[in-house]
Image (cartoon, rainbow, N blue to C red; front, side, top):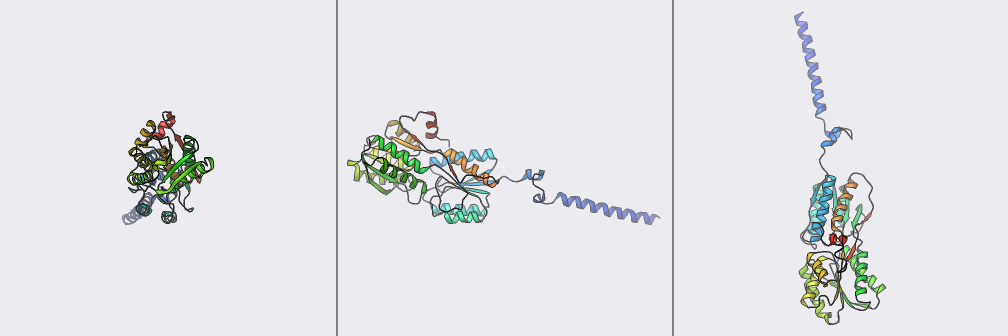
Amino acid sequence: MNYLNLMKQSVWHRLFCAMLATVACTACSPREALPPGTAGNATEKKLRIAVVPKATSFQFWQSVHAGARKAAAELDVELIWKGPLSEADRESQINLVQDLITQRVDGLALAPSDSQALVGVVREAKAAGIPIVIYDSGLEGSDFASFVATDNVNGGRLAARRLGQKLNGTGNVIVLRYMPGSQSTEDRERGFLETLAAEFPEIRVVSSSEYAGATAESALERAQLLLNQYGAELNGAYTPCQHVTSGMLRALEEAQVAGKVVFVGFDAAPDLVDALRAGKLHGLVLQDPVRMGELAVQTVVSIVRGKAVAPRISTGETLATPENLEEPEIRVLLSPEQ
């Protein structure tokens, strides 16, 4: 009898241990096995969203970064901000994107330094299943979900109308371009030249083939060459981005014609705001870089979370002049958050 009782106890003991093992295995099963909406999803890691600017060295990109940080905090996602030091360094930007593909980020917002050079690496990102939003400057092809940017052609139109009106529809003008391959500035240049030709036919563009390059120093050198060549007959000048505008401003100041030559530029910086206030600049076309950074991150996150997004999202463009620079909405754009 005692022997049978011991056998029964042993059997029940083995059954009890098996039940405990089953419970333990269930508790240790992978989180992915849990159905959507269960408590297990609450511990999932944050989305990692990468934002790649053309460069990190200009005030404009620092303001884009501020907007991206704001959106990332509001959406509770991890922000990865990486970019080359120079806007001319296409190879570094390509390498950065390839590195982010290897890291398997959840989404990518890219401001391509060249509308063609970045096509291949964006295709790689799409093939890896990474949703892509292009912002600020366009990219050829269709391997991205949305484009968040200023209407740069319209920005060029605003600049042309301001310069044409200040010149009373007549005079000689130079355009100092930025760099080949940058779609944003190419659109600004095109919008300016087309509008000037259509609406101010008596204005003569004496030079529009010179490129300033990626720094204010190279822009200054090119501007000096243009002023040496056309200074005696020059009435107006247009530049399509911040550092080119700064370079042209310095050249006009050194030639002692700042304020005499009607000058319209693009983007805000402290030296340009001071020049606008002093009457050395007659107009600045302003973007909203903070809003651009916000919308770029918001759009990527929406795509990752399965929401529909518009293929083109405009961030707006505004003309600042010495007459309106103290208006609240203009002041915000002249000194954007960083």
